[in-house]
Image (cartoon, rainbow, N blue to C red; front, side, top):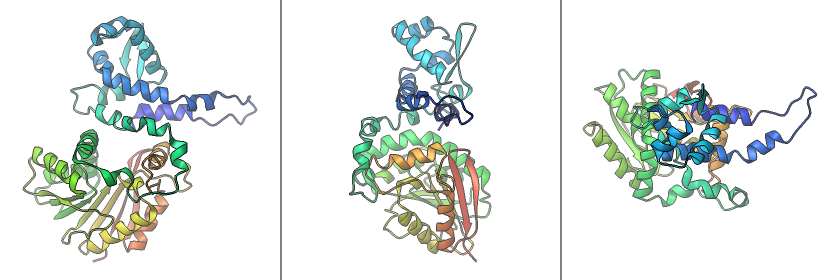
Length: 350
């Protein structure tokens, strides 16, 4: 989630006053209508509004001309974007908020527009959430069970840019010096392995994912020029064995997609497959131990209902328990992205 999006959710989810002030319906109405904020953000990305503003369009009329839209529609959208903190206004002119300027201007190195619209195909199904909640027949992997190559390409084209950023963050946080081979469990685009191979000449890696995903993974690997040391191997990690000979295991950003039983089994299987002294890092959308937040992990956990999967939001305490039950030592939690992702790590005994 972007900083601005996090700010939006914090504002709209403020708890009702407890200091004697009147209790009103405002908070409830804001939450009920917050889909309008999501729609405004996605629409601004789709029409290129943030890019136009970055290039100097600062008034309703200037933005309307740059985007070839009606000035009234430019004004409507820009007012909402100001209300959500995505645009700032001074002396009659608009500018992008700092995170918007960094991540939502097309052509910039950190551009993540495809990620912002990534969940849009689920829009109608979120409107049917009540029906999904009543579903009693849940599947191990939900919608992913029927993924096609086209689905995988759309999915990972959207996640690739932020995946590469996460991969760079990972190699800054984790000392991989002396490590030889990584297995990335459900590695998708292969971003973590690609970055690790580029940073460490002595490292090779294998990305484990479904056959249709591996076709797309190989494209990203080739594009980055590391096909001599990074491979994609077809693997349903909920059932298939893991390769031997790895001294690092990574599992990133797929935690809420699976049940407690499956995650525990995967971590145990990774422990058994790792070389003695090997380490595992799970980068996941974890809630606090009381399971009362943050908002992002709770959202991804609830989102699994849309695909009728068995996935849910796991707490940091849950994941620590999986690691310890699998036999890992020195298990610890490290902040990866505040309010969004934690990195839980452990070491296999030598």
